[in-house]
Length: 375
Ligand SMILES: Cc1cc2nc3c(=O)[nH]c(=O)nc-3n(C[C@H](O)[C@H](O)[C@H](O)COP(=O)(O)OP(=O)(O)OC[C@H]3O[C@@H](n4cnc5c(N)ncnc54)[C@H](O)[C@@H]3O)c2cc1C
Image (cartoon, rainbow, N blue to C red; front, side, top):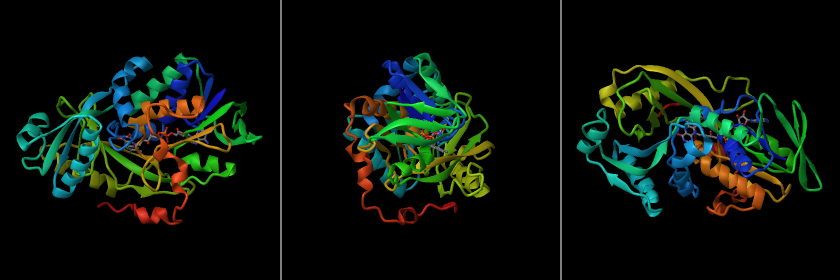
């Protein structure tokens, strides 16, 4: 039995790939599957800086068929730079995609307006990525969960994992609020709570929780490629036409602080709305109708940790560092391979190992400087 702790997209995707290959798998989720960051994110699937990018791009077009349920995945990404600093960043990220054999075309202001009629008349630059894409986070989480069940996997919701019991250098059971589950291997995919579960096993995992917010507008006429980023924002147009956008600022939080960390704040919403109306000036009149917050966990270098530990040798740890939705088809497949064969045969995961944080300064969180104050 392989026990996966956490029913977000990372744990569910891992369970899906394992169950699909006939492994007995149980996902243990303290709340509702997909209720945390996995169901609350911007839906972006365009992570050119990740070693899993190629696999992310290969798998998304197949996911509806593989899972048997719609994810609302749509290809391509339009990226807009409103000033020189944004253009420099856009050029860098585009080069990463080009270097991996993907295509991207520069757009002048008129070409951009043809694709995105609400775009500004003057932009510093814009690119049409013939890669990347976006999907519906709630649909996708649900699709993974149904696919796990269809392949014989079990998902225990409202079941808290309290600890991992180790004997003879191996995890032998997971202690939960519903009793003990014996296991041959464990995958820890518990988002911001992963570090707490690993501490009793002697591992200090440098991840810190942060709150991120999104806004949703009333519907506007559908455009052909509804994944448009820019002005520090990421987001997508839903099938109904709403624009769902996020993009910081991020705020470090304390999960035990007695606050409601998923609550939204007026300054962040105002900042998101202002930047969205700068990105789409012709939509300045469109109202924000919903907003929400979600919790991500971040590593010091902003990259995920995907690792099979040496001790206990049958524990695989995953933390997606706020880019885990789009990567989930690939990260789940990689994690399933780490469980079954000890290595990933389609991507080099060496840069995502936990050991890279060996000499971490104690104040790494402060050095990143995240704050509640909108830019
Ligand atoms: C507003 C927002 C926008 C984002 N935008 C994007 C984007 O556009 N593209 C992108 O790729 N990523 C985006 N992200 C990040 C992405 O959502 C996350 O990286 C991803 O969902 C992480 O998935 P996960 O399964 O690893 O973690 P989570 O979704 O956090 O799931 C972990 C699960 O573990 C459960 N759990 C925790 N502790 C225990 C325990 N002790 N016992 C049992 N269960 C436990 C939790 O209840 C939770 O359901 C965004 C995130 C937010 C919040």
